[in-house]
Length: 311
Image (cartoon, rainbow, N blue to C red; front, side, top):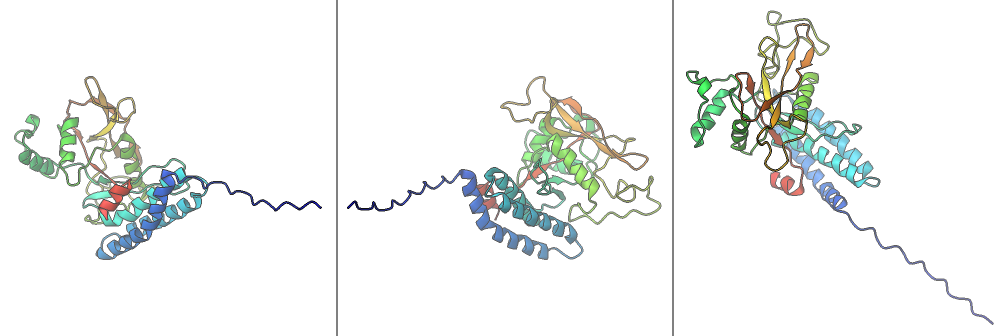
């Protein structure tokens, strides 16, 4: 009689290799509860008079992004990790928020075109601040075109591209110029959400006497005092960006170099209460103008090493 052969157990497939994205995501999964607690504690530390509604909206965005990241984890590790880092940026915002800067949050999770969150100066760098830098740093001086003018709270002008870079690199932590895209995105966010203001500034207060035009869809037309980062067509003011005139970022080795031009950007409220962007203008990196200044950007940690160093 033939003996029945013993059933052979199927050999399970080898476990899928753990990708770098998956490993990073798991480490972020472990850190998120700590980040959430730190964010909530930071919010509680701010006086009630300072704009806690901004924090509430940012933390809601963090939770939405983190939830979407976990939903994506099984299907697309790359997408999940991008959403997770965006959530981390929102959790860190109340913890790291620098004075006199604005946090531009990453877009909601349903937005396909992802853009990391970042901090940006609420106002252009002042001549006061640049004068202090020039006095402390060897090799830098007050521009010849401004001789006879005392530094003050007015925007620093007559600065070339590398002047702006040197000032921003001297900050602690170092900052950089915004890209043209970041600059425009920051202004759009500040236009659409009047809560997005530096925490040390008072809320906008516009009286009937100060109103300079028709009401807009987002409220009354703001004045220079209430929205100092907006510029008006009768007094155009532009700012340096870190984007070359062909639209590419200043990232190639040695750039910018001889012949390169960079984009400067400007935005303003029109007389009819509409928000408008000037067309980007190209300017040689070694040139300066009496109506061109700059502001800085501070990045939010985007690597595990940077994240752990910030905690």
